[in-house]
Amino acid sequence: MAQKAVLDSGSLQDWLKTISSSTQLMAPVRRGRTSFAFTQMDDPADVRLDYVRTVLSPKQAFLPSREPLLSVQRGSMASAPQLMDAPFVLFGVHPCDLMAINQLDWSMLKRHGIEDPYYRSRRNAATIVALDCLPDKYCFCTSVGSSDTREGADVFLTPLKSGYAVESLTKKGEALLKSAKLRDLTRELAAEADAFPQQKRRRTILKLEADVQDLPALLDAKYDSPVWKQVAQRCYSCGTCTNVCPTCFCFDVREVADLTLETASRWRQYDSCQFSDFALVAGGHSFRGERADRARHRWFRKFVYLNREHGQPFCVGCGRCSQQCTAGISLVDVINSIIAEAKERAA
Amino acid sequence: MTASMVRSQPERGGETLYTPRPARIARTKQLTELERLLEVEMADGSELGHQPGQFVQVSVFGFGEAPISVSSSPAKRGSFELCVRNMGGLTAALHRIGEGETIGIRGPFGNGFPMNCLQKMDCLMVAGGIGMAPLRSVINTVIADRDRYGRLIVLYGSRTPGDILFHDDLEAWKGDKRNEILLSVDREAAGWTGHVGVVTTLFPKVKIDAKGLAASLCGPPVMYRFVLAELNAMHVPDDQIFLSLERRMKCGMGKCGHCQINNHCVCIEGPVFTAREARRIHESI
Image (tube, chains in turn yellow, green):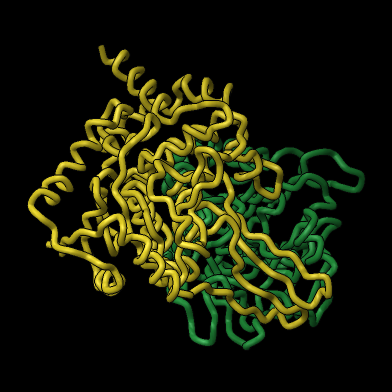
């Protein structure tokens, strides 16, 4: 059982200050009227823990939108890897995004028995402080099993009226909490913290109309459903959904020589299976040339292929893709209309 | 199954799985207007250690990487060959590169053709266009250990006579009476006295017994559809047909997602699949 304590609201700032004075702190800040972003903090006073979701997910701490891989020397082709290993604290990660980090750990570190060295390096450097949260109308974490994620966090915070219930889950977490001014958890506050998950479930309105474990078979049978064409009629193939997705990990590798033509830098950056050239091969043939093929691939990858391979869906119910889709396509609506179609057929 | 072929931990000396190993262009040969053959030696003198049908990631300074299949047989020691079609960018740079210059190599990646399934069998090779590049590696592996295999039947379709690759090899293969080498071009051309028609029109010209036959195919997707129909009609079992799928792999380690077809990762599980597997994968061919 994890050690539980209380951090009063008034002590949060001091703790963040101590953290940021000794290590890099990455935490949510307010960027626009309603938008938030995980950012490398200069001033911990800017940290905002009252956010619902950030525009980009905290996966950028481990899989940045653009990341250097190598610098290559002209002539010799000698190259040096550019690994990021400076310790940092990722603060305020919601349970859905935490589950997404666990999914990425599997895909980048374990899948096919191959470990991505860049991801490994950043992941080792991180201490993660997770923070429980309440949903808005785009959230459906309770449908995909991510709402109570603790695994992957070093410290877990549950909001209380007067502060946070604090659980230390790992040795790293214990070390980080040494600089926090904690007091014992009273019976009343423990009860308040224990009631939080129910409150979260009660407030989650959006739901998938089937168990995620049933989705591989259900969607497989709907491979040729007209729904994919209907989605394609609205989709712009802009790639916003995959950019903001906390579990999407596909990337492109690019290289550019510097002006002296002595060295070149090779980097990787987010790519999207929604782009028309993603599955293009040298002969000019694209294996998912139709927009509907690409749309289906995204849903299938999340709920069928990787769900089957890993035993968990590659969707954590964060709601980012639906909230930010330029065409207003809701991921949940699409799944639910497939489910409805399947039930109609069965009836 | 092929994950063990890939180095799975960052290596000493600051190397990672993404680090290309320097390699030298030993010789070059223009094969056709579009295709050039590069003979490559690893700078540290090591063997590439590939299987026929595997691919490498080739690095060219300032251009990055591209997946290119190895065109020589593992029986060839000391160097390996890449057949490069000039498609612009990196491959155009490989058409300009001079002997003695250095490129980078990662890999080999993928599974390759299952040579153990070809042994003792009559080997049918069906190549379309640049599909001959990886199949040449398979064929020369058979040639290097000829007694272990049954008949060798090569059906090779090109668009025009000018597109035919590896004339020297074709002549050498024809030199052995046990081998049947049949060429075809898509359309009539001046000076061409051979067969005209798509590669499947070569099938009636050879006597093929489905029993004891292993078919290896490499070519464009449209070729697979017609050749598979042909082999089906001859009752060749789907699990005795091997075909290589072309995808544009960026990492070669099952991470980047580019070669994902449905639930399959071509750079790890492929690029060679049995026809039985390929038929189950909607987006494969």
